[in-house]
Length: 90
Image (cartoon, rainbow, N blue to C red; front, top):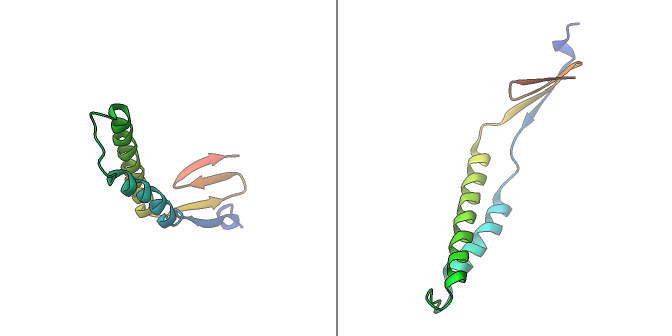
C-alpha cells in the first residue's frame, strides 16, 4: 500500500447561513424603519445606527460569499493534513 491509499478524504462545506442571515436582517429592518427619527436631535445615535447598518450589510455579504463558495476537501494522511490543496505536515 502507498501512503495515499491510507488517506481519508472528507468534504468541507460552509454551514447553512439562513439562521444567521435572518438574525442579521431583522435588526437592519428594525433600525431602518424608526418612527419620526430626527438626525438633528439624536446626532450620535443617527451615526451609530448608520455604522451598525453598514456593518450588518457587510456581514450579510460575507456570509453569502462564504455560503456560495465551492466546497473544499480535507484529506487526512499518515504524516500530513491537506486542506483545500494546502499541505500541513505533522
